[in-house]
Image (cartoon, rainbow, N blue to C red; front, top):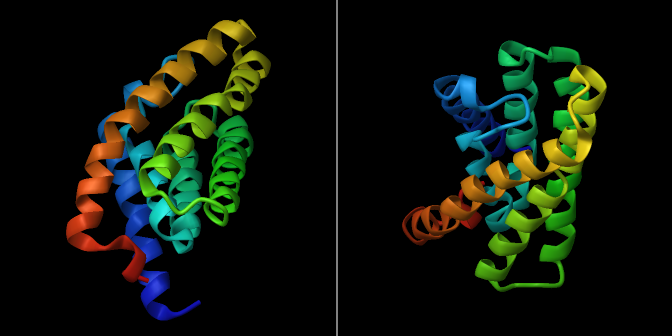
Amino acid sequence: MKSKTLVANGLLAALYIAVSALIQPFGFTNIQFRVSEMFNHLVVFNKKFFFGIILGVFLTNLFFSPMRLYDLIFGVAHSAISLGLIILLAKYTKNVLALLTANTMIFSFNMFIIAFELYLALELPFFLSWLTTAIGEVVVLAIGIPIMYALNKQVHFDKMV
């Protein structure tokens, strides 16, 4: 990994952690509005951001999660699987807005992984948890679409690393 890519991913992880820390009460359990999830859209522009996002999720869950061990397993798995799927889809689709929308849907649908975690850890009802976490995810990522799209026009994420 080039040093520029390493630094960019380190900064991304740090931003993910900082934003997550600001909204800590709203980023965990069955009602989640983890604003830092908007950074998941960066992988649409450049797959090299995968590692920074995963590191950010891992460290956020390590330092802030009330269900640390569960979140380290299920939360990181949810992000890795969802990011992997969008990277795969990006090989076949070049329309950025379509990919951002697909990213929102993939992450939101895959919240069943987090719902299963909440069922195991807290005995919360699976389907209700899936619904509430998915709603939080779709809201955050839908709001993130125009933000990340506009930022990319100025910053050019695809050329950063």
